[in-house]
Length: 172
Image 1 (cartoon, rainbow, N blue to C red):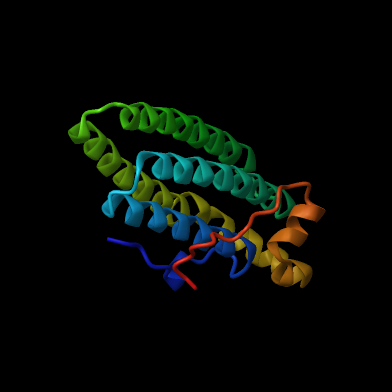
Image 2: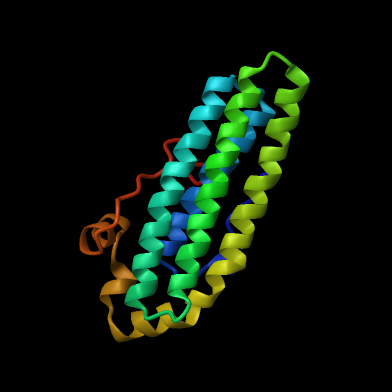
């Protein structure tokens, strides 16, 4: 089952939503690859790529939270660090499992990975990030710059890494 973007997922109608769509595209790509029984190296590379993009997204999101004066910005930062640490551990588990010859263990690990990814992205978008909506909306209303800023512009202005779109994006 792939998760399609819904309007109810929207946080800012701009930068963060673009990142979230990109993350969702990458997760859907991984899930599709797992379902198609891709090779272990491809799965490992896709997970590492998702980690890298997630890390860039978190830094960008934190910069936006700081600019919007979100009171819970520091807590959100610590949550991001915890998520990334868990993600690193999971990637190591995946790589270990995929290096083993037991096909049943590989299948179990990858199946578990699908559930972890979907649970994480949904809790992140429709849970954790919802607190930003009012603050970002107020910031956008006060300054039109934030409504029209691209991901690369934000990265340049806020000392955050740029993020590229997934080349095999399901969004087209």
